[in-house]
Length: 513
Image (cartoon, rainbow, N blue to C red; front, top):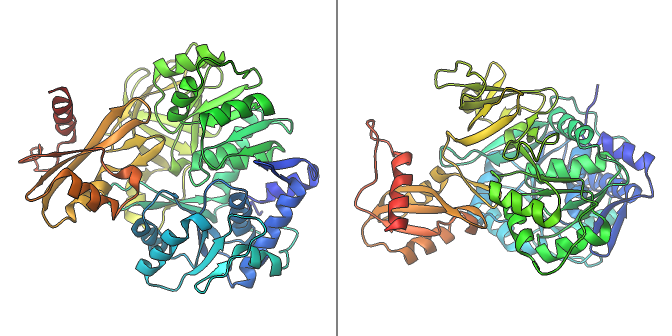
């Protein structure tokens, strides 16, 4: 049986052909038009020689191009590799090389980053540039124009490529615990079932209007605000970037019913135009995830907009949704809810033994949503998934009713405005500096973004300005430490490894001194 994720799109186009699928500024795309463009782009890929199983990388912001291209890749039977648009060219080059991508599709505003990444990768990768303007056609000596390809291609078949449920649909890079990110392989079954189950839990309906400012290169935005509403005949109101004033106006004007947020978005919504009233009475499902939601911020959101936030939990490796606090968001504020159907959560101690209700330990996940594995990383996959249980690296406990509460992290991780920053990755870059001997990175609390990275550096002849400039030439701006501290040594454990707990204590001492 085929379970290509895009089969739902073909069904939606048959069921609601003239209904608006995507709204982007003044641009509207019906389900019939969306499916037609997806088929045409799948035909363009075939024309370019891209076949089933080939990896195609996307460097795209939230515009209507993203669903057209993403679903076109899957319709063709190829594998999508969505990339964070905030990355440095060197980081893009690494993911291109690691995934073995045969094509890179980049928005016009990211074209220079794409070109530099291709230069660094130094292997044959076809470049396709997506125009900012719908009717313009870019003339490139080093690549193809998206609009030109779409104009010359014949639509692919009326049914998507018959993928098997266990076939890889996309590779999403995450978990840079060793200094370089790994690609999580998510299958068609992973994505289809996670979206379908979420659509039933949230009761998505054709009359729903969904606010989509979460980036689609991130699995939270992709599953919650792209796959799930388009599977249900809902209308997706798409935003290139998040602007709190524009968001509040959209909620009122379009009678938004479902929205996805990270805590940073909620912070800016609560503080936006505080002297004005906005009617959010239509918003029945404001879902927040991507990072732990501060209780005080959740209460301020509820008081201002008279709507309790539904906190959820998930990981890239779980497609991503593990749990939602749908049933009891007010009385159990702070909980990320119960596991969704056909997903199971277990709490274990350091020896892997199950913990009782109320006892904290590492969160393990098993179910339909657990990834196939890390791309070309059998050892890391075997270490992360044992007997079907995925070790999340998060710490939490289950209460007597089976609600999950998160209390911390076991793995080194900083979450800045919903985006994961892995300290070992930042440390690796700092250690590339010829005058840096050691580096340790930890999270620093930030009222708006949740956390910011802070770095402790052992070295000679370096200062904050030179270190910042060095990082800017090698990593995305959001990963660059906000503070640098020059020290004579870093705290170590008995085995001589960086002691991250004592490093966090050292940061608190420095900030309070």
